[in-house]
Length: 237
Image (cartoon, rainbow, N blue to C red; front, side, top):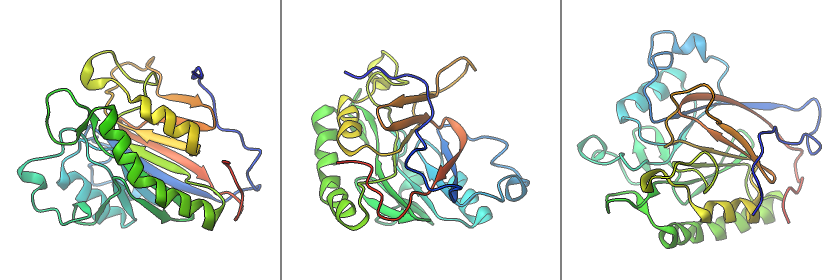
C-alpha cells in the first residue's frame, strides 16, 4: 500500500506556461466569506464550482446565481429530506449538476463524481465497500470512453468521503473507502477533492499526494488552480 506524503503534483506533463482553471470547491460548512454580498468581487476569477456535499441547496443556489459559472456536485450523507425533494433528476438543486457516477467536461477538464459516506446507520447516500464498488463500476465505461477520446481517464474526481487512510478518521461514519484508493491507483486522476472530514485545527493535514493524485479536503471552501494539459497527453495507462 502506497504511503501518502504531503506534496504538490508533478508539473512535468504540463505545457508551460499553462492555462489554468480556477476552481472553488465547497463542502460541509456554510462559510461567511462565500455566503456574503462580496462573493462576486472576492471570487470573480473563479471559472468552476465543485460541491463535495453536506451543504443546503439554498447555499449552492446562491453561489451559482451570483458567480454565474458552472457548478457540479455530489451529495453527502446529510443531503436528503424536504430541502432536496424539489431537485429534478440529474441535479442536486436548481442549476447544480449531480455528478454522482457520471462524467462531465468543463473548461477543458474531465470531471467525475462519487457521492456519500461509509454506511453507519443505513441512511441515504451511505455505502459499504461493495456498494461503492458498484457505483464505481457505473463510471468505468465512461472513463474508458474518456481515455479513447482524450488520452486520459479524468482530471478531477469529486467525492464526499475521502479514500481510506487519507484524511479520514477512525469512527465508522468518517472512515474512508479502500475502493477509492484502488480507483486512484487504476485511473490516476490528477486531483481528488473531498469533503466530510471537518477541520477545526490548522495543523490538520488537508493536502496529500497519493501516487499521481493530489488529494484535497475542501471543508468550508478551498480554491484550486488546475493547469490544463496539452491536448492528447496521456496520464494513465
